[in-house]
Image (cartoon, rainbow, N blue to C red; front, side, top):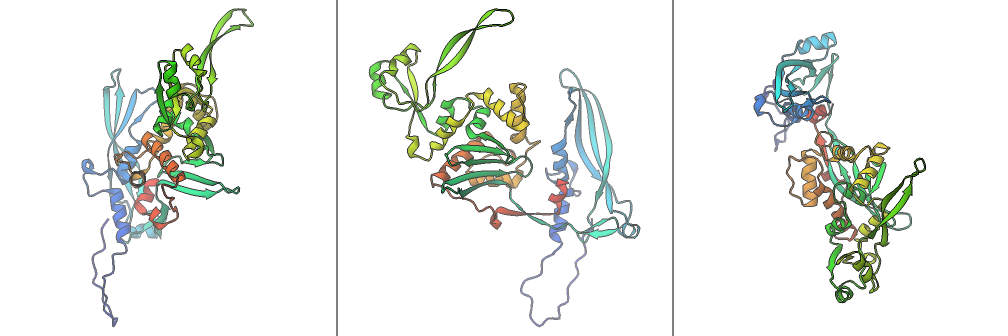
Length: 426
């Protein structure tokens, strides 16, 4: 693609031009050149434009993992017809796009046993003219730059009809599912996936591996562990404090099989002290019988702090460990029962934590790091556990009036998508 040679403009105006006119075609031409990267050697091409599209889709491995198709590089040949011929004959001005691919047959040790490399014709790619336009079916067309919301995280605030302030944090990706955290009128924090699938925020955190109440509450500095070896220490340290977690007891029940008549013993966990229970001296014997010398108690009064949202969410949370949380998330995403724990984990990871299915883009990762004051590598353009935790913490700060909402319609939260970026999405 050749650039139009510079032509000196003649001005017949009486007033002298103070600032030179910019090259109005430069944005279109530069964007397309960045997309194609034809002037750069294949080994030196940056991970953007066409190169990034190939990198995101390769390698391809079959279901039995016996064959793998790798991408090496791509080439673009000269157009078959000239611009004038395309306009006269009603054709599209395009160039043949070819890619060098490698097909490998994998052995037991994952080492290639047989390798075939071949250049493959992928199709005709519409090519930009020197004027920044395209010839499609003989007609000259132009791709207009679009103004879009920038990917990243946006914190908002709304007013419920009953007067309750509701707070939300929405993560907008460049590609992939949306996730939004929202409080309701009862101060319960919900996570919405693609605006339809609804789970409690603590269910999501449990599914990510933070399965115990002690981990969840410790993450937000809402609990502390008090130890006691005798009743005196129990009275001094624990009496009058509220439990942060439930206290369970193992109960064995005999179950009779109706068909065979066989009797089997089934263990079941029964709650003996519920969360929020205020400890008394009489509870010491209960701890002693179960060999417990410590208790997890609340560090704050949840009714007097905006951090009560975590306690309220835990009360609403139907799950109690990682497996039940994964089952709940899987049921919302796939509308069915979880086949097994590993499958459910893979479904969740592919949704937000995989670069194959989820992409924040460079802009999204930059804005996420800046808004949440994180230092995550710019190359990691998908969500991480640290992102999710920090978003929830920032939402609590917003509810506590220690942070500010974002104006999602402000021009600073918008960006221009040029021709190269739009072509990459097709």
